[in-house]
Amino acid sequence: MSQTPAPATTSDVSQGRLAFAAVVVANVALAFGPWFVRAADTGPVAAAFWRISLAAPLLVGLAMASGWTPRQTPRGLWLTIAFGGVCFAADLASWHLGILRTTLANATLFGNSAVLFFPIYGFFAARALPSRLQTMALVLAAGGAALLLGQSYEAGAKHLVGDLLSLLAGILYTVYFIAMARARETMAPLPTLALSTLASALPLLVTALLLGERIMPGHWGPVIGLALASQVLGQGLMIFAIGRLSPLVMGIALLIQPIVGATIGWSIYGEQLGLADLTGAMMVAVALVLVRRAR
Image 1 (tube, rainbow, N blue to C red):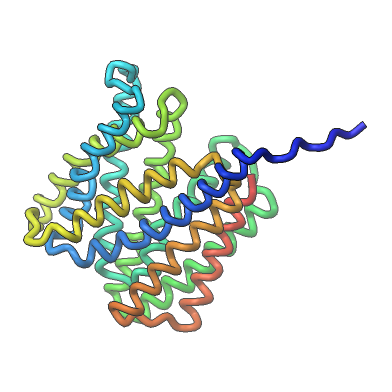
Image 2 (cartoon, helix red, strand yellow; image 1 turned 90 degrees about the horizontal axis):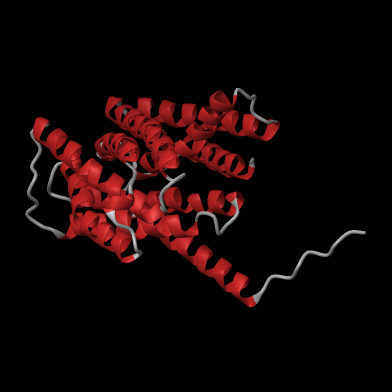
């Protein structure tokens, strides 16, 4: 005798609506990050340093307000978090350098490629072959990326370098995500994010100094907006939404970022997308949805 699933309670419905609103706001906020990077009068890596440094005290304060204390963190976990923080710093440095060299749409798409790279890591870790749906997603992503890279090559070497830097950022974010997934086995999300944020500040500052970038901003608005939009609002709401929504909904919501990024690039910087660009972006977007849907 089959059992009828229990109907969703009012609380469940409210939580689902709240999580959906959170993931929409998170993706819109994250999409504004590249604009703030371009608007900042510091170097791109220095802007990443301020994104971290301005957000870190707030994140640590929120983590401690939730009941977490540093003594609760096992000694062996500090190394994992420190490694993750260094990878996150490298991810931001590479991505911010790429943002200044390619279109906002391409930078956003390639910067989110960790969604595709992480399942590839999973195949190797589990020593398993991808499913038919996952294989389709990987093929679509590869074809779409090839189209976008080809268009950037025709537009000039600078655009191609920007795409490759953004793609490298996606790979580095995958490594960061792997480290944070291990940390999350024994730590709550907010303390994990707070500690990894702290660990990434010094590497970003050292990198910016080595590159000879301007560190101190003349106008604080863009770097404050970057910290609040990307690190606090965007990352914080994404953490809240993860686990409360299905992978398919999360994948579709992720498409908000390149759409908003392309709109900002077109309206402010006059970045036009041709048919090949739109086709490549659509192929990558569909791949993101498929890989999120495939469990």
